[in-house]
Length: 332
Ligand SMILES: Cc1cc2nc3c(=O)[nH]c(=O)nc-3n(C[C@H](O)[C@H](O)[C@H](O)COP(=O)(O)O)c2cc1C
Image 1 (cartoon, rainbow, N blue to C red):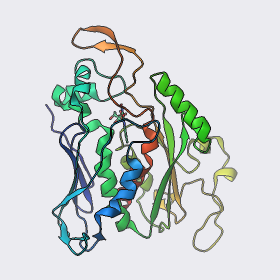
Image 2: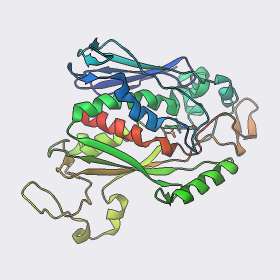
Image 3: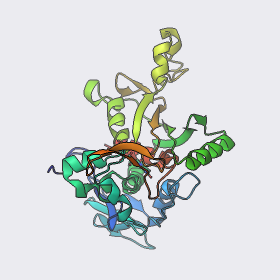
Image 4: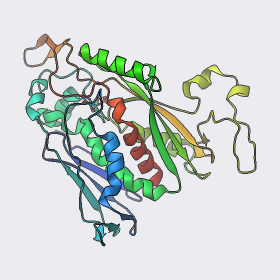
């Protein structure tokens, strides 16, 4: 069986390693390459952790407190505050509301659209236990790492928001609620689109070709489970425009442009305008509605009606994850 590699970032700069699994005792992250002197309070993590947490309509019934535990890498100061020491820092979270037994049926009857099949072939069938490391729960320690990364990249600000659910604009709250309720009633799921804007970005981040800023951000975004696409600025719509419509005319000596069809990046390098991109989040794979799919134990096609607790639309929880990965990418 293969080893499981789960580190983001090279030997220089910030390196992030994820460990644990959704239905094991803990999930966590180790950050290496954090500079000394970042001061934090454990409460600083809560706003982003809360935005990712389940509880809203359309999210899973699983309930977790998401209390971060810190080890190494920090000098304790007063009033519960910490300062990073420059050593590797580990943040863990206990998994309290676990039900690994819900995932037993998927070992030999893998869920279409999930990682049960690929994980079993690559790492062995036990790697699929409780959804393994492929669960959206792994994005919890990533969001915690993102809180530190956001500090590192200041004054750059990263803000992501959900703009569409199942094809309905997020501003149409009644329409979104009705679509979520209908999908849930059908035992089905919905996807969505998350837009991210990075402000106060200096000119010059990124390289031409292989380490273009679009390449690095795309790498970061496709590290999030369930992302199906990314577009910068005008994105795919650029292909249907003329140059005169898509070009961003300069309007001052700082390089500010009248429009931002390029999404703030030219030649792989940030141009000083806001970086704007959107990611497509797929509909949740695990659905109650029966799907006829191969049963590897019975060696025949059989209906799979997946039980367990799942988000009807996990895109609802993705904005803080997009922010975290964006900040981690820019922090490198
Ligand atoms: C925050 C978050 C929550 C998720 N919740 C679920 C879920 O409840 N059920 C599910 O089947 N997939 C969920 N996913 C998606 C799976 O983790 C993902 O589809 C799976 O790992 C397979 O990866 P792929 O879709 O990139 O191929 C979630 C993802 C994220 C980011």
